[in-house]
Length: 393
Image 1 (cartoon, one colour):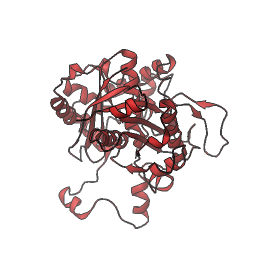
Image 2: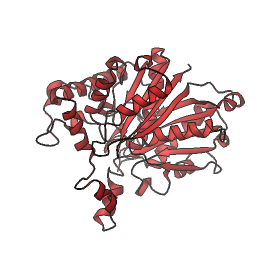
Image 3: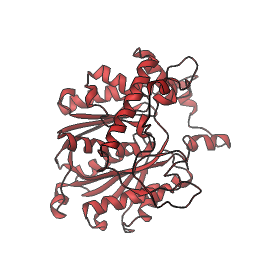
Image 4: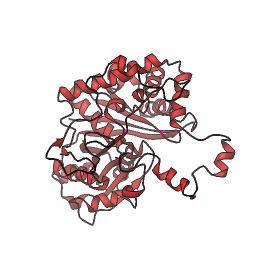
């Protein structure tokens, strides 16, 4: 079977809600990433055969096929198509897997997988709550309600369920959140994000474009303390999770270019990594966020690998209980998990997070001279993607 290779990966630094990226129309922000991937590879823009783009809230500025719109806002020619996908938080990880599958099938040679989300300009839940409030219905159909009576799927409740199931206390979650900020701070101050971040102009909504470049993830609390994190209000009175132990709302975009071995030779491209394994799994939609655990176990079995074989793993920090439970069940090494911090510190721009995490994972493998990397993330509806890559540079 033909193999798929990643030859370029980049991301914007995360922007806080109403922060330094809030002035960017998400289509134009995504176009910046597409242009950067072309520039970094030096490939003929017309050689790109498709753009697959993850985006969760596909309404308003992110509606009407945000992928195609990003192509039209970029330097790519009109001949390049694009399509948008929603696998919730794993949307652009799924875009990467679809791109790899297209290349591995032999039907395409150069595909861009990307993601974008402006959580400032298109707030979370807009795509479901706006129609609901205007009498246009809700996604919970009668048959779903019959199968799950009295249930309204909630990631917040799912995170609390995981904490209870695995015996996690608030103090443990707070400590994990602090460590995320500490690792992100060390990475930022040590220049370890420089190679992966695409500088774009800082632009706050309602203001003129700044002359300053946005190059540092805006969510990092450089002065974070355990006392400060511990003092944040609980999300529910009888729970253990606070906003400090949950991912931050974030504006951002990210992307990777996936090519065939033929394209490597034709365009004289240097591969960063080879796609070794890709899979996706459905799980309990009520607990919802536990899926990365069985999905990783299944992926390792299919790949003929053990967790000890993996040099670095990115497990999205949607809520602190998720990576902590993953570590506990997999018996994984905490020192290899989210080594430069995660979404608790860096932000979680929903549809962009899959490509964002892969960009960071490749960067970590290169800096640590690691060979194998694994990425997974929990997704709304109780799903998880798993991608294993072999670093080649």
